[in-house]
Image 1: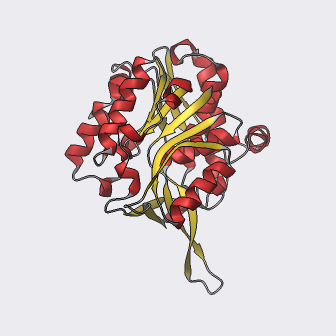
Image 2: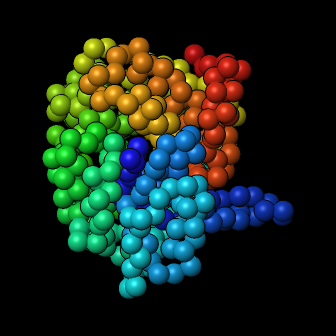
Length: 321
């Protein structure tokens, strides 16, 4: 049985460092939000698998090797002989906040076809996780929708991270339409404050979260960076503070957070609607620690914490107000 099956983009993040003479140096890291989630869940001990596509190039080989190094099954990773692997350059601002410049025209990740997918992976999984970046282009958009329909039909728990990246969409209107179209499939969603407003057209948190739950979503999480997160279901809503750490790079922190949260959901062996609110708060606190720790190192996957590190953080690190 696969605990978490992640589907979507896996790409190269070029993360900036300061060189010996103070110059900018970029280091190659594996990235892509669904792939990051897959790695974080595997690091914590879940059985994790990934569906996606890379180019038949050195970058694609590096990504496959990285996933396998972290014990993520690559049975669903397809290699494209025509398109190149997508690249993303990370730009760091104040407090480790990041922005991205993508190179894919087209990238191999956008070319995944439904007939290339090993559908047995969906049969075998407990949680099917996806994001919106695979919906920016065809044929990966149609593939994503078809896999969602299949996962829903088979009664799988469906997890969604909208992960809005403006430069990958033709315009905001098309992005909103596509990102909102999949909400009726979703059981668990993680959004930023901006994504919550974008998906619901609500300026108030309570109204926006209520609108998400109105789609049939069982669990909604709003990540707020240094302010922690808001966890909500039909039985309650609460903000949980995160842990006080020295942040250097937030790349992958949201994915580490969500991977840790989904790990806890899978570990519970309960459906989202069966998890009580007290447990959800425990899961979100664990996820806060994971995301906070990830921000203390550079890169995404290289910075993701182990179970022992998260538990140590929860025992010994104070929380922000």
